[in-house]
Amino acid sequence: MKFLVNGILKFIFLGVLFCFFLNNYAFCQEEKTTVRVGISNQSFSVYEHSSAKFSSPDDILLVDMASNKQYNIPKNRVISVEIKNSKFKVTLDDGVDFQNLYGPLVLTPKEKIAIVDLNRKGSPAYYGGLIELKSTRADKFNIINVLDSELYLGGVVPNEMPVSFGFEALKAQAVAARNYVNRPQNPYKNYDVCDSTACQVYYGLNSNREISDKAVNQTKGIFALYDGEPILALYCSTSGGITEDWKNVYGLNSKEQKPYLVSVSDDKNQPLLKSEEDVREYYSKKQLSYDIKSPRYRWSVEWGKDELEKVLNKTLLEQSKSGLVQPKFDGSYTLKDLKEINVLKRGNSGKALEIEIVFKNGTFRVQKELIIRRVLKKNNQMLYSGNFFVDKVVQKKDEKTDNDEEKSIFSFEKMVNEACEEKFVITGGGFGHGVGMSQYGAGYMAQSGYNFAQILKHYYSKITLGTMKKEVFYNPYLIEYKTEFYWDKKAFNKAILKVDNHKRVSKVKFRVNSQTFETDMNSYSAKNLGMDITKYLKEGLNTVVFEPLEEKDANKSIIYQIEVLEGE
Image (cartoon, rainbow, N blue to C red):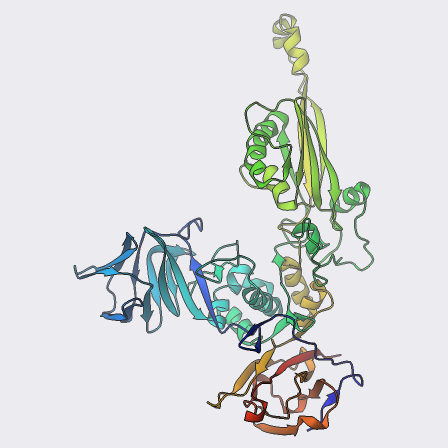
């Protein structure tokens, strides 16, 4: 076995970034093997339930975790669950009931379980794994689907991206979704992620498709990494041709930076949009970009003045609660005579980050891309994106006919007031927040011959691809440390096993598939080591397994990770 030493080659194994300490051991963030998904109601608006019904074509084992009581429920029974005074009551459709269960309750089918009266994509909602019911209040509980991470991704990918976008785009989406569930942004008490657009859209087993399942399988274990850690792989429907910096959309008043989520132009010759003139020039035309096939690539929205005034009286009141409307509007008076809407601050894609709305009796400043879109609603739907410019249009009404002439003589003042009609027109491009991967862009790139690694590296700057880190310790039970990943010969031409030996263990023993290696680590002065393992890999699923450290290294550990490199 030959290690490539730090300082000689560029393959540097970086130190531990996301660790916590327990009993003097450092445990790194490692890949989730199971996911806890909060299941909402039909409209994706409620995650706390007072009752629910379940059924399965298989027998179900029901367990009350508080008492460890177990109940075997025959297949096809409807199981009704309700909660009152923090106690669950379970009733079967044959009249049998179980009362005074404190929970959590766990319902485990052989293969799948349905939530009765809940539909996803027009069909009864079925879920793999198990269902956990956990109280949140005296009369409410969460429905949590606990399942294998890869099975979860199979229920996400075809709902976040149309399968018609192509296999390589679906693989890019699978990696982004895997990254997301390993770096969830929403802090939920009883589950990791929700099942709606607030997290990632998850429909359980209803929508699995063969091609998207294959995309998940053929990217297994692969993550988008920055400095060796999984990135926050944000994505949206359509960027409009230029993506936006994370800081401009999500990092308001934050000192945090995400160097992999910076503005990227599809056209390398297209500069970032720095002025109002640049924005008007770019979004008024269908510039060539990977997003060009999106129905929201370019768009316009129009309001009559009276219509927009009515909208703004409502939305400014609603969004004042966010603290991002200044001064705060309390609705105690009516805003009248809308004069103008001005964009005061823009991001690198031209995205509006702060706007000014001027009425005769009040002027308001609105900050943050999402709040701005929620203020500028049309038909109760927020604006497609923050990439826009505003025009106030004064339009002459149709000339009056001879039959109206006599009436007009006696209503001169009314005629003057109604001679012109004022409209506000917003013209823009893109759909969504515009940060990270554009899904329509990924689809276009896939159809143009790009592979998933190239797609990911276009949208996420300075990333590498590979597995998550795994930490290896001594344990007396001889439990091995295993990493599985899919090796794609069309996308990659080299794989490097990286080992961080900062704690100076004396010996490591590991296998790459069936090939075994054992080395005396004392022979290496470097703390970061790398080994080319490409020749030991096969097309398809591969395993790297480390044996536990020897007892003499009981207070030490190593960290390993595999980086995969693109072919030329």
